Length: 371
Image 1 (cartoon, rainbow, N blue to C red):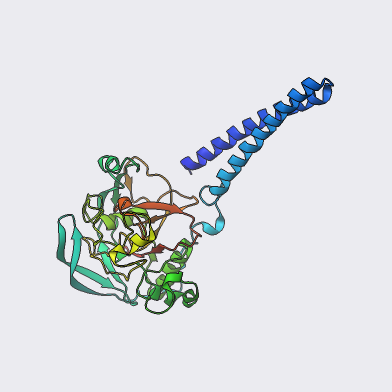
Image 2: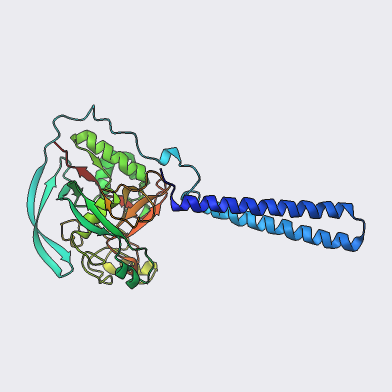
């Protein structure tokens, strides 16, 4: 298991701080000893002054180091927190056999593409709860931004790498809704985010759920249907979001078009959130789908995925699942409050998987069972 770059950085900081502490202790001890050993007032004053300077520098340095480690306590502590790690292996012993049958329908769907809005036929597969899925076939794509795109966005992003996915999968056409999540956990109605309290929000994306709750919802759904549901990997999510496009967004490079997604405004101010018609979340499926018929892949709610967070590797990857362990989980896609200049199909963030965020939800993936 290789250490993450952040773990290596933290270990380096610890070594440097230990060296500084040793030097400060040596100097402080020497000055203190000299202060006690001499009786000349002028020498005692100078020695005392130097002792105060050394102790003050040690205290300030220790305070800065402590604050940095405290502020990163959820991101990169020295040891993984067991309750935030992966769930135990799936127990299939109580699954229905055979799996619950799905139905399907083909619809004419308005999709957003780099060439504008188009109408295309999309086949949706529908499970027993009425959730719609799109089958995604294997393929190769560029995960993250290209070097040119990264430079165009002021160089604020490390550019990505080539990824090949070798297995088909089904991914939900919509973000998981409050109504669906409360079928799994009826008590969630008492702890909804404040602007989704009451009736009329059942068709909005569920937000304010932890990464683990998202996975436990998938386990509950798996046990109901006899199919393996889970969160998508980051690569599976982004491949489905880009839907064969190579532009910064699946509808092109125009991030300022507020008609394509429920996102924040140009300014980071609350009054700009409602410029697209919704102050906070919107019902699912209000905006045009992406070219493969998936809705709200950008905006509305950030979506938890399965991977631990780390920076992209530079070399090509096949069926990547992210680092083997870590302290932040990846979320994708941007939310209702994301400023337009930050929008992109490869948007990613890393967050404490136990935290509850007012713009963080999820969408599920169902594996295609191999013969």
